[in-house]
Length: 181
Image (cartoon, rainbow, N blue to C red; front, side):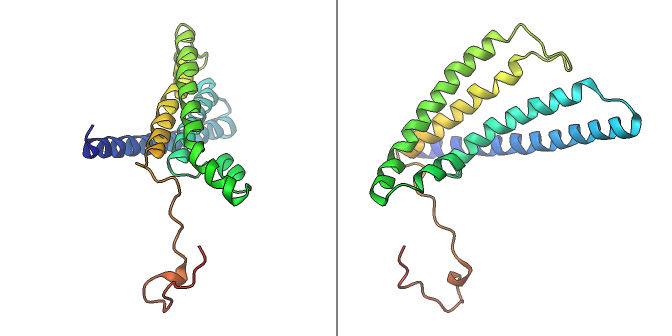
């Protein structure tokens, strides 16, 4: 596959994932706001609201895991790797994408099975198939596996760039020499 096609596909997947995550977050805020308003102002609680909020939360959590892996900001990985001795840290940074790819594949397989098994049942409040909730697992699994494999093959750098401190910005008078990083 040509590098340009791969890059365009990755950008499209990134933008779609980010847009869906943002849309889901806005929808969850609106649903929870409506639920609170209806409960305390109108005196009733819509049965579908808490169920839909939990469904959206599930999707946001799984898409957030994929985005965290894509952007090297997954807290559990950083928490463990940052505490290792320097030589071991280098090895861990190299094998972490492989382990995450295995986890992504696990989510695809198991999440796909859960989704298939839940196709015949429905959520009581919304009437949606229960499989809609479980579908977040294989979707996130595919994204996690893709991002991890791309990291393994150097298409996404393993080490995210360090943010530039304010004193290193152009015109600050500091030339950056003597930096021990």
